[in-house]
Image 1 (tube, helix red, strand yellow):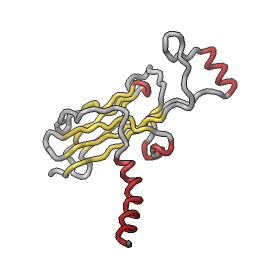
Image 2 (cartoon, rainbow, N blue to C red):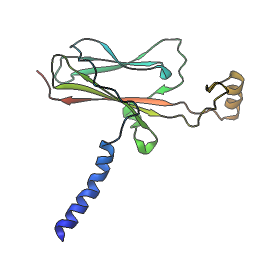
Image 3 (cartoon, one colour):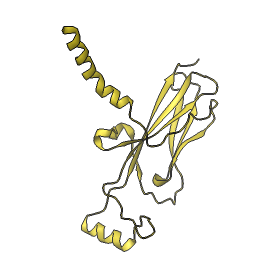
Image 4 (cartoon, rainbow, N blue to C red):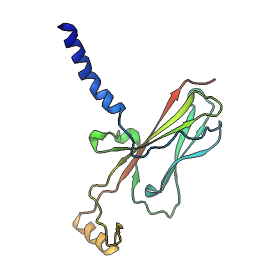
Length: 169
């Protein structure tokens, strides 16, 4: 009887971990092209936030991959914001969605893969679509909403970098 109770309790503790491990991203993509050490490459572009995520393998065993956020254009009008992952700690429980998982293998170290998780938080309220099925924001309407304090929150994005595999020398 005690073995059965132990198994049931073990399953109860494993279920939350399995649920997190099985969270599927909104975008599914194959593993990326292997990248050489020092080769700067685009990991993901997020036009709504006027942001591009760039990365490169450094060859440094302590920090094997460097990821940076780059503004795509100084004149770009962002329709979403990009937030610091460590500050917002995105999770499904707080309204975030796992948007994408990008895997970038190293060309010089076959067992090393940079994994970038991109999380997305939808806007506070859905935009209304017009007759052409497009979400449009008109200046006079936005001014009226701002005056009334009813502006919708912008969608948000956050990204996290992790390394998989064995470190190389």
